[in-house]
Image (cartoon, rainbow, N blue to C red; front, side, top):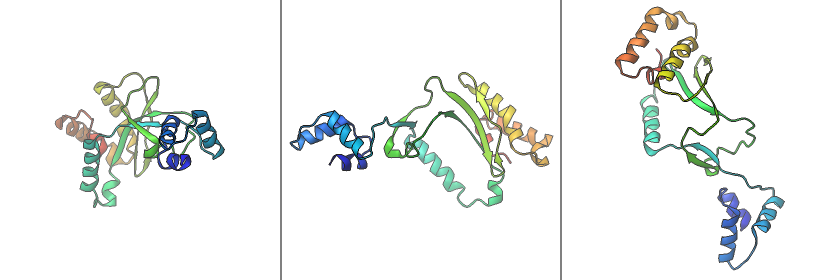
Length: 185
């Protein structure tokens, strides 16, 4: 029963198992539970924290995917994706990010290395380390310094007219760079 419960519900605690067994009429200690799990190749660990996706986030992502489901390959070659991320060192467990092993959380824990990067069909772009708390001004500076240089050296991408078009388009849409960077034509 212990092994079945832990395999089906990996976030089950030893205390949960003690209580379940007590209800079933068996009294055991947390130590006994831990030994049983260890002898069967299982170990205890803390649930990995992942970004919290609210229902609206999931719906927005699905909407974007459905809107572009039939886009041509040549259209996708014009897209440059970017985001920032927190980097952890020494992550060993490849199953750590399985949803049943995670606890949703919000961003901005303390003492992390934050990076901004981008990629397209042509490959990865520049990587930028974010120092301090990112605000709108810092984000625009990161985009200004890194976005266009990352979108390969094709003359149509680096032409002065293209750079000006991107600048005007972003400002006209009121994004200041926050959304227009996702699709660079």
